Image (cartoon, rainbow, N blue to C red; front, top):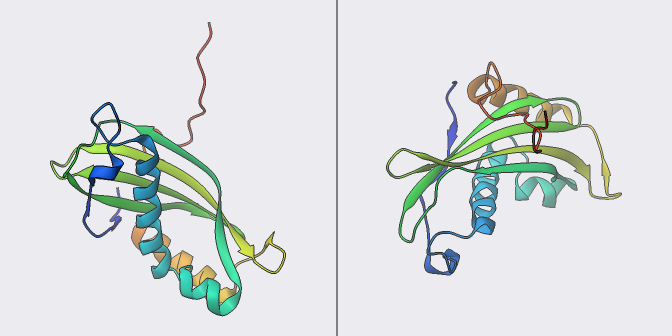
Length: 157
């Protein structure tokens, strides 16, 4: 795999723990979202972009795979890659890496570039498209990772 964007260190806090004694599934999504905010800034799609230029990104689809429980006080980082992008969309892959190095969860996301005046899906401006191209060179993947692109379902014979 190529070099991921690696988030700041995050910690599992008490309010994220459910009655089963591990982190509730909703907070995996929150961790992926926080990490996305960090790397969106690098490609010019962060909060300042939305405020100054009237464009943003919306999540069109996300699939999370829960691979391992996380517990109170554990520290982690989220690794993020760009799988693909076109004129109006980008496809990302993220992994939560627990402090012991084990991958606790993965997220595959398709995001849409949005003109907030509509709101409607719109092409990326040239500078943002160039930022995505540069991010893909540094943090892209040459092939789909294990688990990416899978449909949810029960196989039938």
